[in-house]
Every structure is written in structure tokens, then in C-alpha cells.
Image (tube, rainbow, N blue to C red; front, side, top):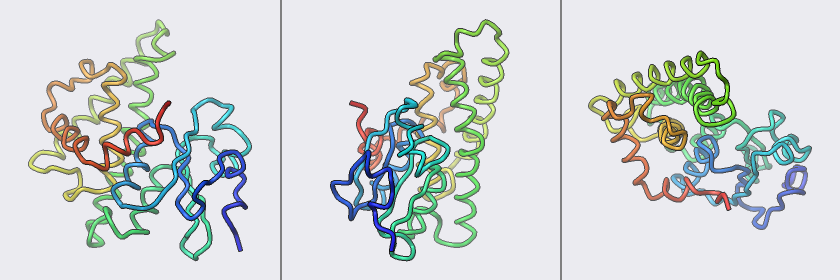
Length: 232
């Protein structure tokens, strides 16, 4: 029978509480999706800070759990068959946790797919495009003289924000009831301020998006999840 000690990642990031879900993450938009979900669902967990440098995320211990070498990842000591299970990719983790608890993934089959399609919208659109926007607007890519990469991702970020703005018209949450789709989308919208890109993507002209992020950040579980594990 598999035990938590069978996961090599636990040798580098030992579990003080092996009966809890082990979270390996850093407080980026992708990382906090999972800590927020764990807080919202009331699941006992232990958070391990995994810095973003290659010495950590590309290490043999970390890639034994996530071959792609990206945070977040989890090990649940109480998997579907009662044995520990490891999961990577933030969207997959959110679905797993929602299915485990029966929460935040829609109360009917139709509602479930409404949530899942917006979760996939974040995974395939907002996350990759906003991440590239941050790279070319704030980080190393900002030094590139060719304006086309920045223009490309600014334009796509504006388009995606327009989709979200229209979807939020007359509703508080992206898929109706609060769900894992919101836990995925809202942290990325909030990251635009960190990138210093709010003006360039037209954030001041998006009242639904602004109110949405404000509502999200006021949730008690979100306040904890946004800083878990702590950067320092």
C-alpha cells in the first residue's frame, strides 16, 4: 500500500502533519488558487513553500510529483481509494478538491459543466495570456525593443477581460454561484496590479471586473489563501 513517504518530494519538504493534504506552492496566481480552495472547503492541509527557481521546481524531488516542474502540486494522504495520491496542474487540483468535498463545482450536471468551461477558459486563456503580459510588460521581456510582443499580449488581455466583463453583467460570480472557476479567475485579474498593467488593459473601464475582484478579496478564506504559503 502506498504511503506518504513513498513520494520523494516529502524527503525535501517533510510533512509535519502526514495526515493532512500536502500543498507544494508559492503565492502566485496559480499557487493561491489551491490554497484558497483548501481554505474555502475547510480541508486540513500543510503548506510547503516551493520557490520558483530551478533549484526547487526543477529538482528531482519536485519533478517526481510534477514532471512539468511548475507549482502548485499536492499529495492527498486520503486519495479516492484510501491511499495517497499526487496531483499537479492547478485546474486538475481544483477539480479534484471540489469532487472530494462536493462543493464549489455546481449542484447539477449542467451547473458542473458551466463551472468547468469557465475554469478551462482561465486555464487556456487568462492564465497563459496574462502570464505573458506580465513577462513582456514588467519582467525580462520588457527590455525587448520590438513592441509587437507587448502589443500582442496587451490586446489579448483586453479581449479576455471584455469576455469576463460581459459574463459578470448582472451576476456576482462567473458561473452563477461561487465556484472553483472564481478561485481560478479572480487571482489572475488581481495580478494585473502587480504587473503594473491595469491602465494599459483598460481596467478602469471594467466596473464589473473591478467589483468582482473586490468581492473575491473580501472573502475570509481568500484573505488567508492569498498569502499561503507566505513568501517570506
